[in-house]
Amino acid sequence: MKYRKFGKLDWEVSALGFGAMRLPVEGKDYGKIRRTEAKNLIRHAIDSGVNYLDTAWIYHRENSEGFLGETLAGGYREKVKIATKMPTWMVEKPDDLDRFFDAQMERLQIDHIDFYLLHALQQDWWDKMKRFHYLDWAERKMADGVIGHLGFSFHDKFPLFKTIINDYGNWSLAMVQHNYIDACREAGTQGIEYAVDKGLAIVVMEPLRGGQLAKEPPSDVKVILETAIPGRSAAEWGFRWLWDQGNISVVLSGMSSTQQLEQNLVTVDSSRIGSFTSTEHKAIEDTRKVYEALAPIGCPARREYQFPSCSTISIWQKCTTI
Image (cartoon, rainbow, N blue to C red; front, side, top):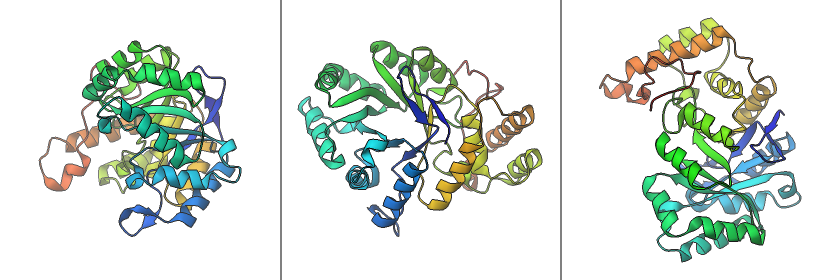
């Protein structure tokens, strides 16, 4: 396993993190986790060096946190850092902060959480958290030793991302959607650079855009990628592009099978910061152009490939507009 600096903290995180939101389930019932299989999967990841686990109130229809608590019993809790999140959209009054937090600690079977995040921040929910004095509440929890560090996950645009960081000087991490299609969307590359400059660790979610970038790509994309590096899977392209970037601390993968875990372990162990070649960068840029060409077409069959435009900017360069 490769490890990386985690922002300003004196701790190194595994470059691959485990997102507990796509665990194996019974049929199509997202709330019914296949418990033995999922427990073995998570423990195998930890035994292989993964030391960052991410969950949230709503994952697996509110069953993820409780399941993770059971899985980490028997000595596994001490091997990892756990992150979970306050469901900001569900908070209706200040007293809800304690209500959700206490329930999460009970579900996870812990007396402190390593990283506590505000979930899916956008303008309305950030404004609400400020009205409810969330940061004062969280500071008291840190002083009491039940929260280790604060962070937030984000789904809005760069100006708000910058505002959130500037509104509070003690964030430890920002969790952002980032992949080679979304490099100029939401916080974007410029948001990552801004956060890192302020000492925050970057946790990447949706590295394969909810699995879209792991599927069989359009024929034009397949030709581009196969010509550049024969035999490399679409998923591996996505992960390698991210692990090439030194300002990213950990990339979360919502793994649902041992096969996915093993593939990711091989990829992360063979990845290095700054190792992406000009040929690989060109292939990714050409791939993005193909997806952008599909986006304006209103054909229902092509909606799966409707990605936001990044103009003519090379996607491994800083995005200046969003």
